[in-house]
Amino acid sequence: MTIDEIISLALAEDIGDGDHTTLATIPADAPGKAILLVKEDGILCGAALAELIFNHVDPSLLIDSRLHDGEVIHKGDIVFEVTGRQASILKSERLVLNFMQRLSGIATATGRIVKQLEGLQTRILDTRKTTPLLRELEKYAVRTGGGENHRMGLFDMVMIKDNHVDYAGGIVQAIDSVHRYFSLTGREHKVEIEVRNENELKQVLDHGGVDRIMLDNFSVENLDKAVHLIDGRYETEASGGITLDNIRKYAETGVDFISVGALTHQIRSLDMSLKAEQTAGNRQ
Image 1: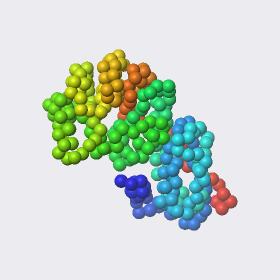
Image 2 (image 1 turned 60 degrees about the vertical axis):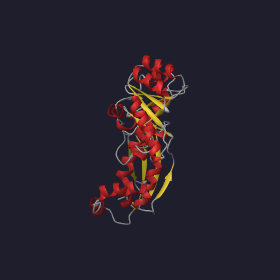
Image 3 (image 1 turned 90 degrees about the vertical axis):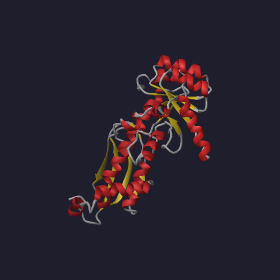
Image 4 (image 1 turned 135 degrees about the vertical axis):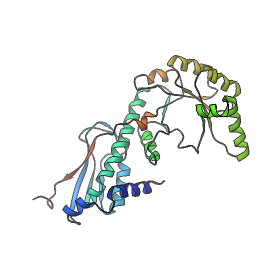
Protein backbone atom coordinates (compact mmCIF):
# COMPACT_ATOMS: atom_id res chain seq x y z
CA MET A 1 0.00 0.00 0.00
CA THR A 2 1.36 3.42 -0.96
CA ILE A 3 1.47 6.46 1.31
CA ASP A 4 -1.17 8.16 -0.86
CA GLU A 5 -3.48 5.17 -0.43
CA ILE A 6 -2.96 5.20 3.35
CA ILE A 7 -3.81 8.91 3.48
CA SER A 8 -6.91 8.45 1.29
CA LEU A 9 -8.25 5.60 3.40
CA ALA A 10 -7.49 7.36 6.69
CA LEU A 11 -9.29 10.51 5.55
CA ALA A 12 -12.26 8.50 4.31
CA GLU A 13 -12.47 6.74 7.69
CA ASP A 14 -12.52 10.08 9.53
CA ILE A 15 -14.56 12.30 7.23
CA GLY A 16 -17.15 9.87 5.89
CA ASP A 17 -19.82 11.91 4.08
CA GLY A 18 -18.56 15.21 5.46
CA ASP A 19 -17.08 17.17 8.36
CA HIS A 20 -20.49 18.39 9.44
CA THR A 21 -19.28 20.44 12.40
CA THR A 22 -17.02 22.51 10.18
CA LEU A 23 -19.61 22.69 7.39
CA ALA A 24 -22.13 24.03 9.92
CA THR A 25 -19.88 26.58 11.65
CA ILE A 26 -17.19 27.77 9.22
CA PRO A 27 -17.71 29.64 5.91
CA ALA A 28 -16.33 27.51 3.08
CA ASP A 29 -13.70 30.04 1.93
CA ALA A 30 -12.82 31.67 5.27
CA PRO A 31 -9.01 32.08 5.47
CA GLY A 32 -7.12 30.80 8.47
CA LYS A 33 -3.77 29.93 9.96
CA ALA A 34 -2.60 27.31 12.47
CA ILE A 35 0.66 26.18 14.04
CA LEU A 36 1.85 22.73 15.05
CA LEU A 37 2.94 23.16 18.66
CA VAL A 38 5.26 20.73 20.44
CA LYS A 39 4.20 20.01 24.03
CA GLU A 40 6.87 17.46 24.94
CA ASP A 41 10.59 16.96 24.26
CA GLY A 42 11.54 14.28 21.76
CA ILE A 43 12.56 13.53 18.17
CA LEU A 44 10.34 14.82 15.39
CA CYS A 45 8.89 12.42 12.84
CA GLY A 46 5.94 12.84 10.49
CA ALA A 47 6.37 16.47 9.43
CA ALA A 48 6.93 15.44 5.81
CA LEU A 49 3.86 13.19 5.98
CA ALA A 50 1.78 16.06 7.41
CA GLU A 51 2.58 18.14 4.35
CA LEU A 52 1.36 15.30 2.11
CA ILE A 53 -1.88 15.11 4.11
CA PHE A 54 -2.53 18.84 3.86
CA ASN A 55 -1.80 18.76 0.13
CA HIS A 56 -4.14 15.78 -0.32
CA VAL A 57 -6.99 17.59 1.45
CA ASP A 58 -6.39 20.96 -0.22
CA PRO A 59 -3.46 21.69 -2.56
CA SER A 60 -3.90 25.42 -1.95
CA LEU A 61 -2.81 25.12 1.70
CA LEU A 62 0.63 26.64 2.30
CA ILE A 63 3.06 25.02 4.75
CA ASP A 64 5.91 27.02 6.30
CA SER A 65 8.16 24.33 7.82
CA ARG A 66 10.45 25.36 10.66
CA LEU A 67 11.59 21.93 11.88
CA HIS A 68 12.12 18.68 10.00
CA ASP A 69 12.01 14.94 10.62
CA GLY A 70 14.92 13.69 12.72
CA GLU A 71 15.46 16.95 14.59
CA VAL A 72 15.40 17.08 18.38
CA ILE A 73 12.36 19.06 19.50
CA HIS A 74 11.45 20.72 22.78
CA LYS A 75 8.26 21.80 24.48
CA GLY A 76 7.13 25.08 22.97
CA ASP A 77 8.73 24.56 19.56
CA ILE A 78 6.67 25.29 16.45
CA VAL A 79 7.12 22.65 13.76
CA PHE A 80 5.25 24.43 10.97
CA GLU A 81 2.63 27.02 10.16
CA VAL A 82 -0.19 26.15 7.79
CA THR A 83 -2.18 28.84 6.00
CA GLY A 84 -5.29 28.57 3.86
CA ARG A 85 -8.95 27.67 4.17
CA GLN A 86 -10.01 27.15 7.77
CA ALA A 87 -12.26 24.28 6.73
CA SER A 88 -9.35 22.45 5.07
CA ILE A 89 -7.11 22.92 8.11
CA LEU A 90 -9.82 21.53 10.40
CA LYS A 91 -10.47 18.58 8.10
CA SER A 92 -6.75 17.67 8.15
CA GLU A 93 -6.08 18.31 11.84
CA ARG A 94 -6.78 14.95 13.47
CA LEU A 95 -5.05 12.81 10.88
CA VAL A 96 -1.96 15.04 10.94
CA LEU A 97 -1.79 14.84 14.72
CA ASN A 98 -2.47 11.10 14.92
CA PHE A 99 0.40 10.32 12.57
CA MET A 100 2.86 12.91 13.88
CA GLN A 101 2.31 12.04 17.53
CA ARG A 102 2.70 8.29 17.00
CA LEU A 103 5.64 8.48 14.62
CA SER A 104 7.43 10.99 16.83
CA GLY A 105 6.80 8.68 19.79
CA ILE A 106 8.48 5.81 17.92
CA ALA A 107 11.41 7.98 16.83
CA THR A 108 11.85 9.32 20.35
CA ALA A 109 11.81 5.86 21.96
CA THR A 110 14.26 4.59 19.35
CA GLY A 111 16.58 7.53 19.91
CA ARG A 112 16.51 6.94 23.66
CA ILE A 113 17.64 3.33 23.20
CA VAL A 114 20.26 4.18 20.57
CA LYS A 115 21.75 6.73 22.95
CA GLN A 116 22.25 3.98 25.54
CA LEU A 117 24.60 2.23 23.12
CA GLU A 118 26.90 5.14 22.31
CA GLY A 119 30.45 3.93 21.71
CA LEU A 120 29.41 0.31 21.05
CA GLN A 121 29.13 -1.54 17.74
CA THR A 122 25.67 -3.02 18.39
CA ARG A 123 22.85 -1.73 16.18
CA ILE A 124 19.16 -1.51 17.09
CA LEU A 125 16.56 -3.24 14.92
CA ASP A 126 12.79 -3.08 14.83
CA THR A 127 10.52 -6.11 14.23
CA ARG A 128 7.28 -6.97 12.40
CA LYS A 129 5.29 -5.99 15.51
CA THR A 130 3.77 -3.00 13.75
CA THR A 131 0.31 -1.57 13.23
CA PRO A 132 -1.30 -3.37 10.28
CA LEU A 133 -0.96 -1.37 7.04
CA LEU A 134 1.25 1.26 8.73
CA ARG A 135 4.49 -0.75 8.76
CA GLU A 136 6.28 1.42 6.21
CA LEU A 137 5.58 4.57 8.22
CA GLU A 138 6.48 3.03 11.58
CA LYS A 139 9.72 1.58 10.23
CA TYR A 140 10.53 5.01 8.79
CA ALA A 141 10.08 6.41 12.29
CA VAL A 142 12.55 3.85 13.66
CA ARG A 143 15.13 4.96 11.10
CA THR A 144 14.40 8.59 11.95
CA GLY A 145 15.25 7.82 15.58
CA GLY A 146 18.58 6.23 14.66
CA GLY A 147 17.60 2.58 14.52
CA GLU A 148 17.65 0.17 11.59
CA ASN A 149 14.97 -1.95 9.97
CA HIS A 150 14.84 -5.72 10.21
CA ARG A 151 12.97 -7.45 7.37
CA MET A 152 10.00 -5.54 6.02
CA GLY A 153 7.79 -8.63 5.89
CA LEU A 154 7.69 -12.36 5.33
CA PHE A 155 8.80 -11.91 1.73
CA ASP A 156 12.26 -10.34 1.94
CA MET A 157 14.17 -12.63 4.30
CA VAL A 158 14.03 -16.20 5.56
CA MET A 159 13.74 -16.21 9.34
CA ILE A 160 13.48 -19.66 10.89
CA LYS A 161 11.80 -19.17 14.26
CA ASP A 162 11.04 -21.62 17.04
CA ASN A 163 7.70 -22.71 15.57
CA HIS A 164 9.30 -23.36 12.19
CA VAL A 165 11.95 -25.51 13.88
CA ASP A 166 9.35 -27.45 15.85
CA TYR A 167 7.09 -28.02 12.83
CA ALA A 168 10.03 -29.00 10.61
CA GLY A 169 11.29 -31.55 13.13
CA GLY A 170 14.45 -29.82 14.27
CA ILE A 171 17.23 -27.34 13.50
CA VAL A 172 18.96 -29.36 10.78
CA GLN A 173 15.71 -30.31 9.06
CA ALA A 174 14.54 -26.69 8.98
CA ILE A 175 17.80 -25.36 7.51
CA ASP A 176 17.98 -28.12 4.90
CA SER A 177 14.36 -27.51 3.90
CA VAL A 178 15.13 -23.83 3.29
CA HIS A 179 17.99 -24.67 0.93
CA ARG A 180 15.89 -27.24 -0.92
CA TYR A 181 13.26 -24.52 -1.36
CA PHE A 182 15.91 -22.17 -2.75
CA SER A 183 17.04 -24.82 -5.22
CA LEU A 184 13.51 -25.57 -6.40
CA THR A 185 12.38 -21.96 -6.75
CA GLY A 186 15.59 -20.25 -7.79
CA ARG A 187 15.16 -17.83 -4.91
CA GLU A 188 17.94 -16.51 -2.75
CA HIS A 189 17.38 -14.75 0.55
CA LYS A 190 19.40 -14.04 3.63
CA VAL A 191 18.75 -16.77 6.22
CA GLU A 192 18.39 -16.15 9.95
CA ILE A 193 17.60 -18.79 12.56
CA GLU A 194 16.38 -18.37 16.11
CA VAL A 195 17.95 -20.51 18.83
CA ARG A 196 16.62 -20.90 22.35
CA ASN A 197 19.56 -22.45 24.15
CA GLU A 198 23.19 -23.52 23.84
CA ASN A 199 22.26 -26.96 22.49
CA GLU A 200 20.37 -25.45 19.55
CA LEU A 201 23.20 -23.01 18.97
CA LYS A 202 25.74 -25.81 18.74
CA GLN A 203 23.54 -27.62 16.22
CA VAL A 204 23.53 -24.53 14.01
CA LEU A 205 27.28 -24.06 14.37
CA ASP A 206 27.89 -27.69 13.45
CA HIS A 207 25.55 -27.61 10.45
CA GLY A 208 25.90 -24.09 9.01
CA GLY A 209 23.72 -22.84 6.17
CA VAL A 210 22.63 -19.56 7.75
CA ASP A 211 23.73 -15.93 7.72
CA ARG A 212 22.58 -14.73 11.13
CA ILE A 213 21.77 -16.37 14.46
CA MET A 214 19.13 -14.86 16.74
CA LEU A 215 19.77 -15.65 20.40
CA ASP A 216 16.32 -15.51 21.95
CA ASN A 217 15.77 -14.80 25.65
CA PHE A 218 19.40 -15.41 26.58
CA SER A 219 20.67 -13.92 29.82
CA VAL A 220 23.57 -11.46 29.53
CA GLU A 221 25.96 -14.17 30.74
CA ASN A 222 24.66 -16.77 28.27
CA LEU A 223 24.65 -14.25 25.44
CA ASP A 224 28.27 -13.38 26.13
CA LYS A 225 29.18 -17.07 26.01
CA ALA A 226 27.20 -17.58 22.79
CA VAL A 227 28.78 -14.60 21.02
CA HIS A 228 32.22 -15.98 21.86
CA LEU A 229 31.22 -19.45 20.60
CA ILE A 230 30.03 -17.99 17.30
CA ASP A 231 33.27 -16.00 17.12
CA GLY A 232 32.33 -13.88 14.12
CA ARG A 233 31.36 -16.78 11.84
CA TYR A 234 27.80 -15.49 11.60
CA GLU A 235 26.00 -12.25 12.36
CA THR A 236 24.46 -12.29 15.83
CA GLU A 237 21.20 -10.85 17.08
CA ALA A 238 19.77 -10.75 20.60
CA SER A 239 16.07 -10.48 21.39
CA GLY A 240 13.72 -10.99 24.32
CA GLY A 241 13.81 -9.66 27.86
CA ILE A 242 15.88 -6.62 26.89
CA THR A 243 14.87 -3.25 28.31
CA LEU A 244 16.17 0.31 28.36
CA ASP A 245 17.74 -0.42 31.74
CA ASN A 246 19.72 -3.52 30.72
CA ILE A 247 20.29 -3.04 26.98
CA ARG A 248 23.81 -1.67 27.33
CA LYS A 249 24.89 -4.77 29.26
CA TYR A 250 23.58 -6.94 26.43
CA ALA A 251 25.34 -4.79 23.84
CA GLU A 252 28.62 -4.99 25.72
CA THR A 253 28.75 -8.72 24.88
CA GLY A 254 29.64 -7.69 21.32
CA VAL A 255 26.38 -8.90 19.74
CA ASP A 256 25.88 -7.31 16.32
CA PHE A 257 22.17 -6.48 16.59
CA ILE A 258 19.50 -6.17 19.25
CA SER A 259 15.89 -6.33 18.02
CA VAL A 260 13.30 -4.50 20.09
CA GLY A 261 9.64 -5.15 19.31
CA ALA A 262 8.55 -2.51 21.82
CA LEU A 263 9.80 0.22 19.48
CA THR A 264 6.59 -0.09 17.49
CA HIS A 265 4.07 -1.99 19.62
CA GLN A 266 4.45 -0.46 23.09
CA ILE A 267 4.82 3.20 22.23
CA ARG A 268 3.41 6.29 23.91
CA SER A 269 2.65 9.03 21.42
CA LEU A 270 4.46 12.34 21.77
CA ASP A 271 2.22 15.23 22.85
CA MET A 272 1.54 17.83 20.14
CA SER A 273 -1.27 20.20 19.26
CA LEU A 274 -2.49 22.04 16.17
CA LYS A 275 -3.47 25.52 17.34
CA ALA A 276 -5.55 27.97 15.34
CA GLU A 277 -4.11 31.48 15.21
CA GLN A 278 -6.36 34.52 15.28
CA THR A 279 -6.25 36.66 12.17
CA ALA A 280 -7.92 39.93 11.24
CA GLY A 281 -10.49 37.94 9.27
CA ASN A 282 -11.71 35.82 12.18
CA ARG A 283 -11.52 38.21 15.14
CA GLN A 284 -14.82 39.43 16.49
